[in-house]
Amino acid sequence: MRSSLGSYFLVLNIVLALFPAAALSEPLRGEVEHSETVPAAPLSMMPGAKLDEEALPKLIPGNNWIAIPNWFAGTWQFKTEKVTRMRVFVKDKAYPPVPFTLRNEFQRAHGQQKDKSGQIWDYIKVPYSYTTKVNDGYLGYERIVSVEVPICNDDEIIRKAFGPDSVVDPNSQEILLTQQKQSVNRYTKFGDDAILLDSSTKIFDIQGSPTVLKISEMVGMRVKPYEEIDEQDGRNLKELFAQFLTSNGKKDLIP
Image (cartoon, rainbow, N blue to C red; front, side, top):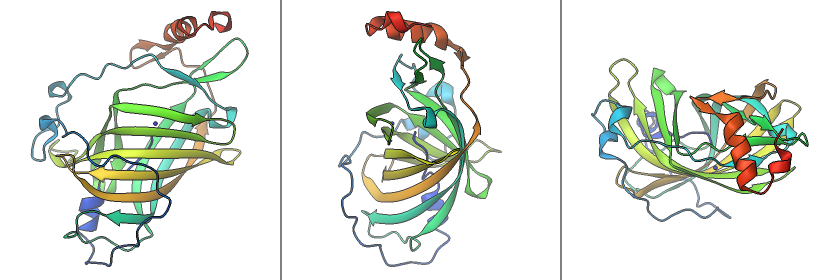
């Protein structure tokens, strides 16, 4: 749910091409459950094509919200991702020895509305897309088509997310690489204004076959405290939140 992680391993194949062949890391122990295969990515995300969101299936978000602890609320800045363990499914590829670090720079806001009791709620916008800054000046374009939140309490938040992503040349808008990611992201408090994001991410090729499983971590710094957001991306969140509370038998909590 990187987001999301997230979150993200967009340029691994480009980065790895710069390294000499290396011994594969030992198999992971106690890994989380991932799918064996996934559906193929949209044809309009094929490498060599120009990135054109209008040519992709429309992303129409639902109206899902989840109550979150106060330590998770606010806007978070992430900059680098440290890969600590890997399992490789494609034997003819060379990977750098772990640990290694990738640039993965993005901001993410969590918590947009408060109910009458003062509880902060996070809008789970899905499906959606966003861009990140990655290695060598490239852009990452990510489409998140599903998010689940199996755990959300005062100690930890776990989100599962899936979707295709591409590495894009910012000048020509040419798609250089497309992969698909299935991520399980665990957020924990790391200080007054810091959170730790531990991720297990399985990477699939554009056809849906697995290529690598990675374990990584990122630290997010709070750059803005919680603030109520009534409108976002053309959507009236205040109205959507009231509709959500009403449809879930919590009309008395509408602020």
